[in-house]
Image (tube, rainbow, N blue to C red; front, side, top):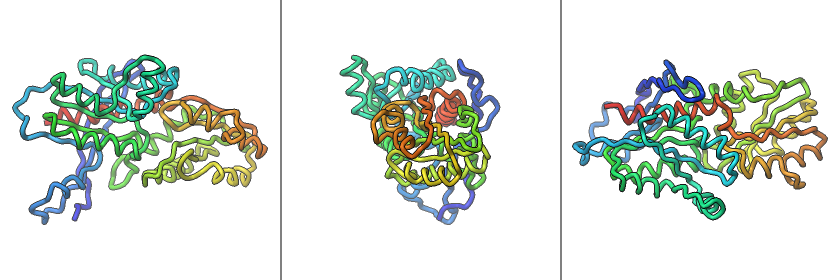
Length: 335
């Protein structure tokens, strides 16, 4: 039913951020399957099923309305104020620097975190629903949504639900992808290979008896499979003994420990693969409790060094998030 080849739209990101050139002259792709030409009367459901990559919706009832544009940045959020400043805030600032004339709004998808920040800091950060309502109230007619998610899992499903629920309230809306989306399939780029190169900039020197354990979040969503693909790309890149495991998905820490022992690993660096270094990094990964990953590994005889920094602190990874925002914006601008 779907055409075999992907229809590609090429976007050039020419934005310069405060932290260097992002995507200057580097192509970024958004794609969707084209329906087989034999399909004469495609239903709305069929058309929506064919929408992958950067999604775009133009509201036919509002095409004569004047353009007033905004970029909405969606993040899970964190109550760790210091990490938030170094990761989410810094990434949003880079997106704003890439689009200095546009309004950029941040919203957190975790309503619990929004409530806790309000109670603890007196700071009001909107939920996606609140942000969309305010943009409409303020007269914005075109919105590019970009995500600070790593994989297209549960949180990104929330982002796309926001897109679908609010797209008819605006003249035009777009939504970009997480930093990990394409895997080199159908001649697309390989986000995971690019991510490995970006992530490796923060790896310590890895000797024969050393290993880096990259802690992902994990999810019940089928997108948990991205971690297996990431492990494949890490192995192919020959970056040394680097293993992916997750807090709430697969593989688990106990999946990796036998592999460490089989390789004669003695020294382990624990590193979060999350936008922020929040509760999971500080407590589940590096905490002093007996059930923390650090404690479990030490009990197994490994020397453990925690690296407590979120992905947003890594400039190369941060640039990938800015590139995704650029793609959503370019789709909004495309006629």
